[in-house]
Image 1 (tube, helix red, strand yellow):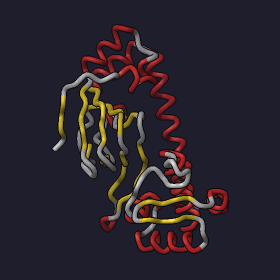
Image 2 (image 1 turned 60 degrees about the vertical axis):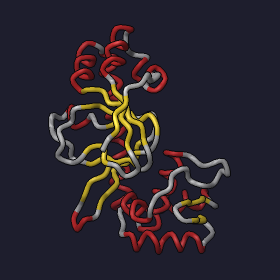
Image 3 (image 1 turned 180 degrees about the vertical axis):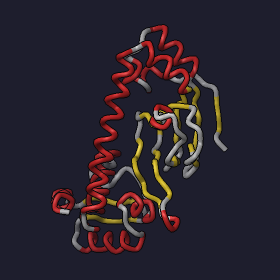
Image 4 (image 1 turned 180 degrees about the horizontal axis):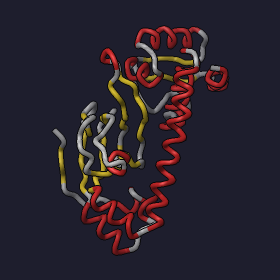
Amino acid sequence: MVKQQKEEVDLSASLSEVWRVLTEKEREILRNSSKIQYFKRNELIYCEGDEPKDMMCLLKGKVKIYKDGVGGRSQIIRMIKPVQYFGYRASFAQEDYLTNASAFEASTVCMIPMTVVIDLLMSNPNLAMFFIRQLSFDLGVADERTVNLTQKHIRGRLAESLLFLKDSYGLEEDGATLSIYLSREDLANLSNMTTSNAIRTLSTFINEHLIAVDGRKISLLDEGRLRKISRLG
């Protein structure tokens, strides 16, 4: 069950992109309306078919947006990192959620009622432009990934996913290990392939000294060659 806790949160720092386009009165409304929720690893944040009631901002942790497909397979559509907003598109479209969201690891999420967000949008054109830009950016990323995941071969898809994770979450202090630990199934779902294909391709990359694997930890040993494989598809 989601743990709810009332505590003071520095929203001005956490929600800085939105914060700077609001008036002081609007900031107070946002501050008083927001609540903080905590999610355990693999805990659902929302489900397909749920009514969207809140806009969410990930303050800490990692979240995946995914869709269940045929035969029980899932497709990871987006990865959310701090401080990104999610969960609001369905409300703007006046429809129920078409996807699911769950925490990759223990995560802290700021929940802002969509009724409050819409009221602020109606009175603040700068805030409206922020969300237009954000939705446009997300659409562009989705379009590019759709083409890549349907037209690239398995090697190109897996290389792209590894680089996508590096660009999204960065590397650990050693400068090589991805700062996110995925199961083989999650990596396959991100790359639009079966788990067995993901395991075989990872083994090939290891043998070619492109990556090193230690459990769920993946280190990129030759980023240049991975980018070439991703580019050539």
